[in-house]
Every structure is written in C-alpha cells, then in structure tokens.
Image (cartoon, rainbow, N blue to C red; front, top):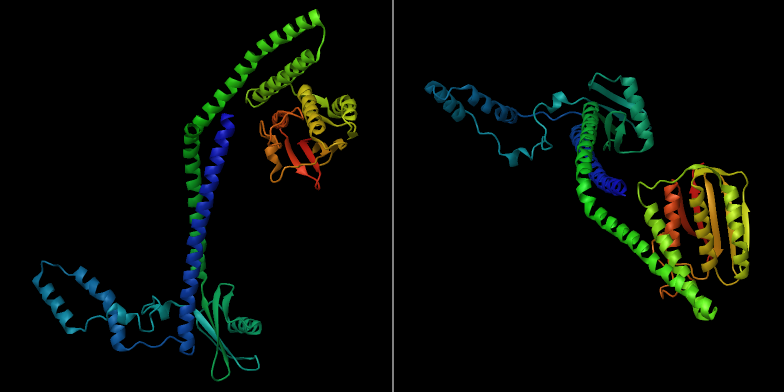
Length: 452
C-alpha cells in the first residue's frame, strides 16, 4: 500500500511538472521561431520597398551609425590619467555631431533592430516574373549557395501556388505585385536562424530532461513523508477492522450456542430461525471485511499455481443454478473449455461466487443472469444480469466498499455493499482488472480480465 501510494504521488507530481516544462519549452521555441521569422519578413519588406536592394545610407547617417559603436571604444582605449587624451577626446566630441536619439533612429529604414552591417550580412536573392508567369529577371548577386536556374524554378513554383509569404526549404520568401504588372519574389536565407533554433530546441529539451531527473529524485525522497499521514490512517483502519472482526466472532459464537440450547429445550421457532439468519449474515460480513483487509495488504501471500479456470467456473456456476431458479431467475452459462491461468484456486472460486451472488441479489424480478468465460486478447470472466435501476454516471463506484445503489440503505436484498470490493481486490491481486459496464438500459455487466 505504501509503495502504491508513493507511486501515485510521484506520477501525479511528475506529470504536472512535465506539462509545465513542455508548455514552457514550447513557448520559448515558438517565440524564437516567430521572432526570427518576423525579422526575416521585415528585411524582405525593406527589399521589396526598394526594388530588391537595401537603400543607401547618407554620409551623416552612416557616420552616426558608426559613432554609436566607435565613441565607446575610443573612450575605453584612452587613459583617464592622461590629460592629452582627455583633451583629444573632448575635441573629438565637440567636432562631431551627436548621435541621433533612439526615437529618431527607430524611424529610419533600420527600425527593425538592424544596423549598418545588415546589407552586408543578409544572404538573399530575388526573381521577377511577368504577367504570363515567365521569369523576367533574376538577381543572385547577394548569395552564393543557389544557382539562377534553381532560383527561377523556386520562384515559378511559388508563383503558381499564389502564396504571398512562407518558407521554401531554408528560405523565407515574400511576394509583392508591382505597379508595372510584374511580380517580385524575394528570398532570404534563414539557414543560420534555423540551425540556431534547432540548437535551442535541443538544449531546452536536454535541460527539461535534467530538471525532470532532478525533480524525480527529490519528489521520490519527499513522497515517503507526503503519504505517511494517509498510510498511517489506512493502517489504523485495517487494524480496527481486523480487531473488530476477531472480537465480534466471540459474541456471535456465544449467541449461536445459546440458540442451540434454546432449541434443545423448546424446539425451533421463527425467532430462533431469524437469530440464526442474522448470525450467518453477520459472520459473512465479518469474513468479507477480513478478506478485503487481507487482500489489500502488500505482503499477502497467495498460492499461485496453474489452475483450470474453466472447471472452477463450471463447478461454481453450477452450485448457484438452484438458487437462481428458486428466485425465479433465468440462469445460463457460456464457458469455454480448457482455459488455464496462474492464480489462487480458492480466491478465484470466491471471486466467481461473489459476482454470481451479486447478480442474483440485484437482478430484476424474473430477470436473466449469464456467466461467461472466453479467451481473446485477454481471458475474460463476465457475469451479466438484467437490472431495473442501474446507477447513473461512473459505474466503478460500485466497487467502493460499503457502496449501495439503494440510497435508502434497506437490507431487502441482503447485501452490505462490500462483496464487489472484495472481488476487485481479488482481481487486482492476480494482476487483472475488473470493470462494470452498462449494456443498454437494463443490463449490467461485470467483466474481469486476466493475462494469458
């Protein structure tokens, strides 16, 4: 139980962390992709506005661009203790116009975080296509990695697709219709940006794995302390059930012996018969509670051998046939021969008894009950019955201990709402799964699946 709770705690915590890290990494990488794509689009629009070239910078503008980088370098190179250097710097500063303010620089052609080196560092080419769709002019003078023939083929393909911008391999393209009727297609090489984006994706992914590993170690260490209150509560509950079960057996034995004495003196009566029925029901409840408590323990030792599940089903189902018929139920079986599993024979017998007993108690009046065993992808043991009031919503709650669909809690059916909990514990201890399914409006199925 402790290991199971710790695993659930760790899985929940790590799943939440994984989702957060995946979202964070996705945002970082998508933002990076969007940013360099926007940067490429900005450059392509500048080129489109200037017929495929960067606009020339005026002398004053070029000097101001250089001044931004050059003034700080000259100040760092000068010696503050040297008076002549200070005089020279002062003279230099007074003889040159001040650099433009940031607001002024943001309004020029390099307002997209570009500088004077951008025309020389940008690898691009462009193609003009006339109205008939034929290549009119190609300029590959600013890139060395593509031939004019290849550039023309790329342009014709994009022109035919009617797209205005996008990616073609590692090139970002932009299409503009000119006043002359021609179409200008501009391409910017983004291979360097894409390479950096891939590196960022790889590094963030590796960082995520490192964080997950570190957090897994930390969460696993902390999980023992986190689940300890729950474990302590469950242990107290189990101890109480075990102690109460053993303590109740003694007074029940005394009551049973007293009834025997009364019947020896006065004979059987409706009162003694009623007392015996209640003793039997109480004994059955105690036994189921103890079985459930024992099955949920991690160190429970079941004797797993190769058992003939088909024979167990035939024998157990046959023992309930008379009970079902006396209750006015239609009782049928469909059991495939020769099905074997590794399991505990007594537990499997108890499992089938619990499921059939539940079907008899809660099936509709003059309803039908069917027991099936078949082999497919898994070995499936199924008990189905007609039912007038199938609970709405999730039927898995039927396996909760002491759960009863009858909210009035009457005992007309004779059940205590613990049998299906024991059945689930038995199936789980055998490495299987069990579920309750609704089949139409008035049929409920309990299906237990085991590995072959």
